[in-house]
Length: 138
Image 1: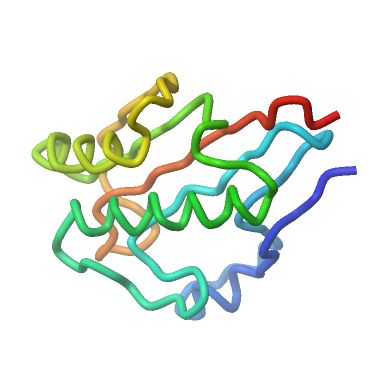
Image 2 (image 1 turned 90 degrees about the vertical axis):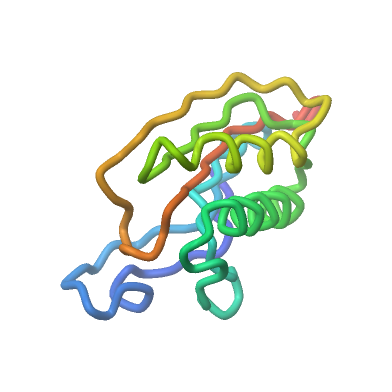
């Protein structure tokens, strides 16, 4: 059985959109692999946006959210194996990657960067998702 962390429904998180999807912020699969939902510059508890107009601040909040969710899943930043970074503008690459790099110093995950036309909300400039594996979890 998979453990699902911070379950929610999109009708509550995106009330302006006609959605009704059951999701969660992270899934711990088979007790050792942690899949973290793409994180943005939004507070996990209040859903307030952080750093509107500032990709670097949004990246820092996304990474703080990831660290918090990994802790809730029984993992840590050093367990991250894969990072995917979505940017709405290639000019954000350097400040965002510097910020993510500070959070992941010494971790050495594989990384993919993608420039996209937009994210789920127009004020979001960057989204980061990760996959982590908890060692000796079984």
